[in-house]
Amino acid sequence: MANRILIVDDAAFMRMMIRDILTKNGFEVVGEAQDGAQAIEKFKEVRPDLITMDITMPEMDGITALKEIKKIDPSAKVIMCSAMGQQAMVIDAIQAGAKDFIVKPFQSDRVVEAINKTLGN
Image (cartoon, rainbow, N blue to C red; front, side, top):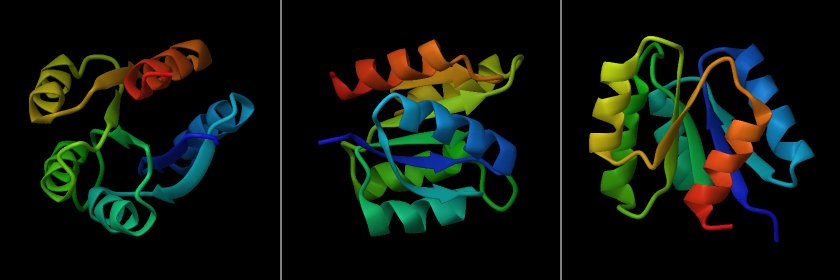
């Protein structure tokens, strides 16, 4: 069975790029959200195996959403996505429970490697 993944990013273009990488590599995208609040609702709804989460988003940022998702399910697997130069935020994310992070613009081999490592594939 394909691993089920939820994509969270405020930029539709970024969601499309990561969805493309995931589907080409045999993962199933079970949902998308464009901010942290939507991510929490979608997480409850679809219970994905893994979430890719942008850090900087309107409404609710990725780190706040990560903390809320971890309250719902402490075993939730989340990989943070960040642009270059957001190292401090990445450290905050890891401390909040993120399993890994990938840097934008996405390199498909790095995305797949991070997901497989986190899922133990």
